[in-house]
Amino acid sequence: MQGDFEAHARILRQLGAEVIEVRTPEDLADLDGLVIPGGESTTIGKGIESAGLEPAIRALHAAGTPILGTCAGMIICDAEHLGLIDASARRNAFGRQLQSFEADLEVEGIGDEPLRAVFIRAPWIERSGPGVEVLASYEGHPVAIREGCVLASAFHPELTDDSRFHAIFMAMATSVSARDGAKEEAR
Amino acid sequence: MGVMTERATFRLKTGLAEMLKGGVIMDVVTAEEAKIAEEAGACAVMALERVPADIRRDGGVARMSDPAMIKEIQEAVSIPVMAKARIGHFAEAQVLQALEVDYIDESEVLTPADERNHIDKLAFEVPFVCGATNLGEALRRLGEGAAMIRSKGEAGTGNVVEAVRHMREITTGIKNLAQLRPEELAAAAKELPAPLEVVQEVAAAGRLPVPLFCAGGIATPADAALMMQLGAEGNFVGSGIFKSADPARRAKAIVEATTHFNDPERVAAASIGLGEAMSGLEIGPLEAEDALLQNRGA
Image (cartoon, rainbow over all chains, first blue to last red; front, side, top):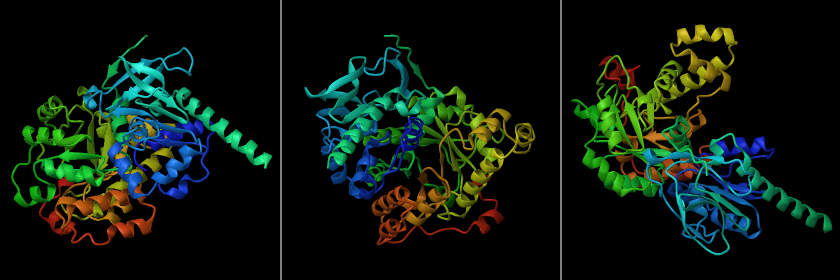
């Protein structure tokens, strides 16, 4: 729709996924996972509204389909927007472009080697409920979280060549897809 | 934790442009216009003193905007705020960096300050976008450190013909480069002319290393869809919005057409009831008067 969807697609294809771009509710049928990319959250939010995507995204979420939101995507998932996670993001919390930065970040679930995290006019998680697992923090602020089928980061794993964060998402999508496949077979 | 923090890397500079992809960056001259743009779904605004159509009409020297106005706009919206500096006017760029604008457009729309040299963009922490009419120009700007390229088009005309020409020049140029054998690249670099390193990088990747947007002459939703189909990764719209009869609706419609550029029914629906588009200008007479902005700073 809007944002760095191409960068996400590049990494997901490297990991063996088949990727489509989503612009209409019909595009959301038959997905094993949905990525809400980095971009401008107001633009993406308005785009979701004008294209009528919200009910379909909610249905995906209700069905347990993994959703990855990075930066603006994390904001879109938060309690003040689509409400897919019990957490609130603070927009541009780290400041304007001049304050954008890269840093080595330890992230739970990707191994010991830190990840090069790219923060661009990035948000952080201001408040999170008890069901929210914090996977990484920077200067005391949660910047990667997971709750149920939603994985979200304030940084942009899609802008590096390190695919370990996306691998978490791929594993979530693969296990859901296997579960649905098993159900299908049981019928 | 072994935290090695870096700022202003090229990845951070192009990264912000990556975030703007698929979106519309709108020229605004007041905080109110900036709010209208944000409300319409703009992914960023360009703060400037006069839109290109007025610069063209009024004449005189067009300079960087009043810092007070830029600050007002920064306070009014939460989306990125860009601002224009004159070609080669690195002191204006320093001022814009001090104001913490998110992107600087070294723009031919303003009166050039240096007829020979562009700004050394690598010396800045704020990223730059630059205009280009062809691949050689785009690659020279990349060599100087631009983190985003846009077509120049012919600003302030509401006539998309020049943007089409420039976008085709750039994308065809990239395709041609990608077909060359490695030993042919030095000659290509000499002909363009452009730095060999950048030429090699683009030839190997088959694309620019930074996002490529369209600017200069977009006035309708169909114009926006046309440019996206021709390979633009997003659109800058200047006079086209706030010189039209109903800026709020037209802004929203151009955002819609930029997102759904491959869906003619949506572009059609977005195009209904917008009122009059800005009145346009033919390129021929401007050329005869030597009034083309695109020839500045090649």
